[in-house]
Structures are given as C-alpha cells and as structure tokens.
Length: 84
Image (tube, rainbow, N blue to C red; front, side, top):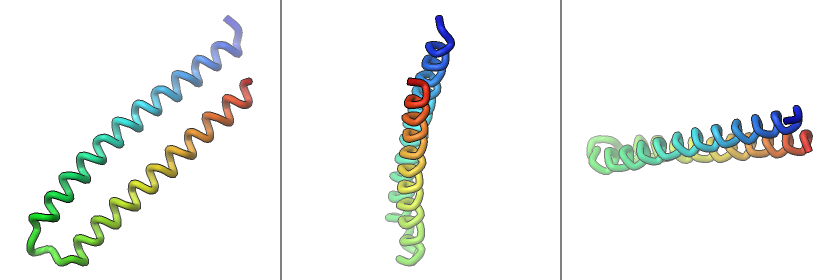
C-alpha cells in the first residue's frame, strides 16, 4: 500500500467520523430544541421577549452549525484536491 493510499484512507476515515459525530450532535440539538419549545409553550410566566431570546438563540445555533459543517466539508474537499 502506498503512502498516498494510506493518507486517502485516513482522510476518508476522518471525514466519516466527523460526519457521524456531527449528525449525532445535530440529533441531540434537535431533541433539545423540541424540549425547549415544549417548555416555552408551558411557561406562562415568561414574557414574550424572554421566549424570543430563546428562539433567536436556537436560530443562531442552527446557522452557526450549518456554517461550521460547510467550512469543514470545504476543508475536506481541499485536502482531497491536494492529495489527488
């Protein structure tokens, strides 16, 4: 096995590990988001502004996660280009 093949296999493994971990974290985040929405619906004492803070925070988290995933995927593509 050549050094290039070893490096390619390592990159594939790292990309698969990242994708699996990111997907697991995304599932946990989505579950936490559903739980927060249910809690906010039942929190009658919390003003609308307070609820808006939580929903804005969730939107920012989701956007940040998408941006992070795109940056990592771009990095993997660039590495594949260097190794090709």
